[in-house]
Amino acid sequence: MKQNTNNLVLIKAYILLIFLFFNQLNVNAQQENETYFKVSPLEDSDLKLEDLEHQIQKTYKKVLASTVTINTHATGVLVSSDGYILTAAHVVLGVREEQSSITMSDGTTYKAIHLGLDEKGDYALMKIVDKGTWEYLELGSSSDLGQDEACLMFGHSSGYQADRPALMRIGFYKGTKALGYLKTSCIMMPGDSGGPLVDLNGKVIGVCSHIDRSMEDNFYAPIDPVKANWTKLINGERFNKRGPREPQFPKDNETISPSKTTADFSLEGGKGAIIKAIGKTVKDLHKSVVKIKSLNEDKTEVNTYGTIVSSKGYIVAKASELSKSGLSCEQYNGVISPARLIGIDKSNDLAVLQIQSKDIIAINIPKKTDTRVGTLIGSASFKEDIKYSGVISAPARQILPAAASQGFLGASVTFSNKIFVLYENGAAKLAGLKRGDIIVKFDDTKIESSEDRISFLKTTQVNQKVKVTVLREGAEKEVEVTLLKENEKRIRNRHIGYDLDTSERKYDFTQAFTHDMPIEVNETGTPVVDIKGNVIGINIAKENRTSSFAIPLDVVLQTVKDIK
Image 1 (cartoon, helix red, strand yellow):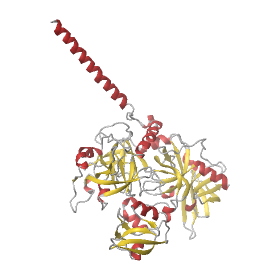
Image 2: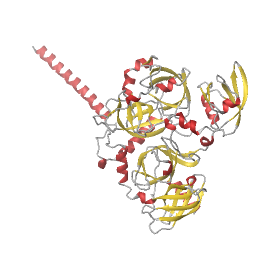
Image 3: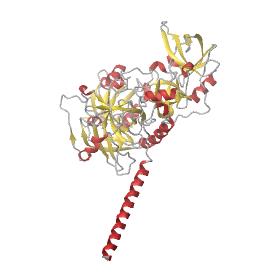
Image 4: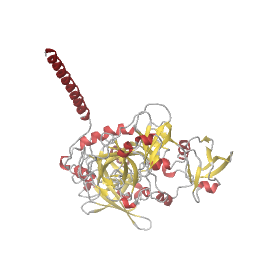
């Protein structure tokens, strides 16, 4: 009996130890979870933008390191330390070879083989051939997203640029299509395909898939089916294929089912709530915005906007949007005053004007400005203190002019530099290049990869003559090609993501940062502010669907000082 009692005591002791062990594991797990960003659903009046901004900036560094470029024109994300890359199925299906070129965030390149894909689900897996250990993102969950939950997306809009990292955009989850695609207000366009949609902890919740015309219509393949079909993907299976006449993204699948839950960071109204919150810090900012009117040579009126930066009536605006004749400025109260053009800074496309008026309200000049990537921002208009909200997507840097005047070959070329489409009246066809030609040299530069080809063409100008050496039927042949300008109509017809008005001069600035606010072409010259209401820059160009440029305020003020 005593032995039994001793045994019973030992059993109870073991049970207690086991309980304490698992209880500690649970505590450790809870402590680990507490390092994640979790905020209860908030009213906009209680919104702590500083907390949100801090988490975005923290997440940015983590996601950027894991985001890659695929064949210079699409995006992917590393999802394992041994080199598995997640991207969109249509990215892989658009490549004629069985492997792709991968460019890391630091510019290094590798080869990756294509594995499995879900054609209708629009997600695919690749694997880097080289051995190594890679920074990667964990897979999150797409099934428990809350309505208006904040999210971020990363991608190489309009293709890889060596001087620009993957662009970050902010948005909010809006619901799910019948076929499962997630809808968010993170704006995307061609080049972003395959990029990661992440939650505020940097976990992948979706893959950039497709868009519609509205800036609000951005759709992502959810991550849960990726996890469910992981074995198929690794084994190289291609499943859920479309029929020969079946559209990739059926139009009868437009109904959006909103989420009935809230989770992590949910903000009713999404970007609109941020507009409202920032607006409370910048009362009457619109009174510092003027409508600038000028006359073209044919006497037609040109309208653009500018920002009053001094109580002495100095105004900054986008120079290329102005005509020097008939200059006047209309203020918020309807007063119209003649304007004098003081000078132009051609390097940044900035014009400095001056008006004489009794009711001049200039912006407040902050002692210090912050233009780090991930900074939450707003943009004013002529009638609204804050019209748009967004985030700084890429750091302030020199915006090179080459992209504006780059020569165009006029052909579609594969990853292995084989020509497979010649555009009508394009440079390649006019010079006599043929479908099936493999490009091996431009002038004296060997072309051994798609990166070599694209890098060379980025250094060219319209009307530049280039000696193109191709491999045709086993023999090398040299053809002189006069590069042409890419047809604007062809650009706009290429994809709905390009079918919108952009600034005439949208490149060639000594310093500008990129943001994701969808300003209109004629809304350049307006101020950009941070969450504290500090003006940090002036909008200078609308680049494309996802990106606009702003000149940092310190550069603007130096320009005014130099010119006046």
